[in-house]
Image (cartoon, rainbow, N blue to C red):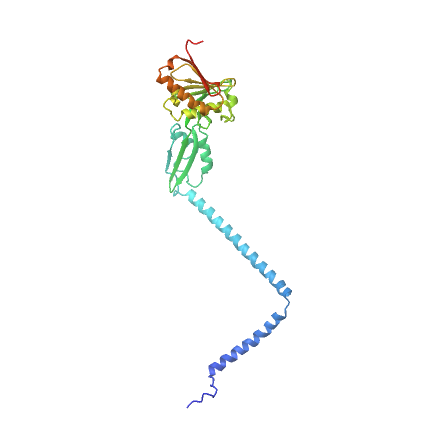
Length: 308
């Protein structure tokens, strides 16, 4: 029968474990005492060099890793560029109408057999944009062996006559006033003409100055390009730019001048549409000698043939 008040007798393994831990604690305690007796400055003085060494070691390992990765990448690209895996097998040109596929390919330098990896897309696009009709270019690699070149050309609004000692040709001009290409053949003349003796003075870097009289002529042509039934772009033959008289408009089917002035171009365009509508409706258009939109404030003068 057991006695609850009698202490429990420990086994051999239990007593051996306690002896081991007591010895271990006797070895650690003096070190703890030394650490507690050290000053904070002494500990920091020993720990800082150790931290710096670890930091430098980490940085060195990182830099070495970067160099190795760079070398491996360069070597891989060199191997791939010399291999037949990524060779151009097809070049597709799209979006072009005025420039030929051959012109685009010659400017780009793209050819079958060239590596897909070793050409500069941005520089190649700039080379293609040097073609007169090309406005924007997008070049896209389609792995593993196709390059697609998408061309966006200028949209011609009218012709501009830059008469002068050096420039005597007609040029195409777009809706932004950019003079971009000379007219090469007589088959491309189905556009109204922006003309004027001093017209080159209204341009800056082959672009029409927005606030100039020629800029007003460009605005008139843009309004006509919306293809109003009474006054569409196809009905306009010429817009003359005069520093003294402003804009003078001529229609394709009628010889009389329309003096538009050099201000309120948008307002005067729609007023002219109303005037022409009445003249067409009353069959009086053939009797017109001239129309003055700049006659007076909010007044229009329609002079008829035979009138003094």
